[in-house]
Amino acid sequence: MFYIVEEDSPLSSFLEKKFTKKQVKQYLKNREIFVNGKIETHYHFLVKKNDEITLVKRLEKDILLLYEDRDILIVDKPYHMLTVADLKHKDTLYVALSSYVKQQNKKNKIYIVHRLDQETSGIMVFAKSVEMKEKLQQNWNKVVREYRALVHGKVKEKDTLHFYLKENRAMQVYVTKKDQYTKEAITEYTRLRFKNDISFVNITIKTGRKHQIRVSFKEIGCPILGDKKYGQKDACKHLYLYASKLILPHPRTEKVLTFIKPVGDDFLDYL
Image (cartoon, rainbow, N blue to C red; front, side, top):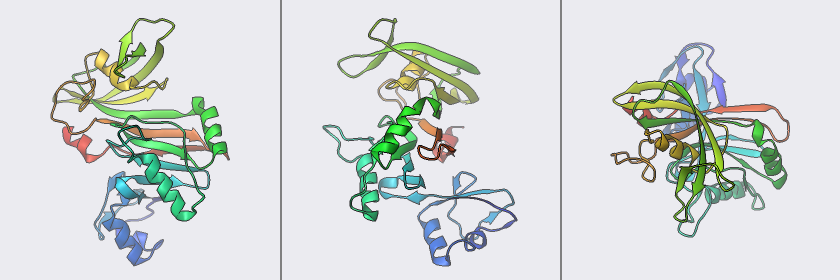
């Protein structure tokens, strides 16, 4: 739920016009209230006119539910969580969301529309029916996906990275010459800031290849911070790649929906 503040007031006063005092305290305690994209937990925090307040639901395992209707779920995937299970990992985003929708009705199901790497966090969409999944995927060429990342070194102010990728038996993706087996990968980026030999970049992908962003930045000598597979040794505890924006036509109404979530304080600490 999203609100615009109309006049200066304590956060509690604004929220209590819409929810009970008990609910407001619980939302703040659960870190579910965002003011201008940042978590706010203080009951008497002063909000100002035109501030943006977002209420998100925090599910199990620190998953944020950003939006829900009868057709789709929009969530913020945490770092280090697989989208779906593999032979080694069963504790996945899909399992957590399936459990959530079944709390409302045991017959409810969710369906995977797209994926993010296990190490990547950010905004994802899930469908609540096969029909909605197919409609989303049929219109995937209309979907805009943007990422924010921290990369080693100073990249150009703006560039398009155009490579051809292959995957070896060890499931390592690499850049090679174009042939009948390669997959084209096009990645556009803009440098937003440079400090301490680290570039903060905004990324738009034109193709959705496995590990596309990570491999492309490795290829130009500026791997993403915290990338244990394609990067350089650093002290980062996670991959600094975040799916920050998702724009898509709603599968039922075709209304264009825009979801934007700022990067966390862990990004800002470097900048």
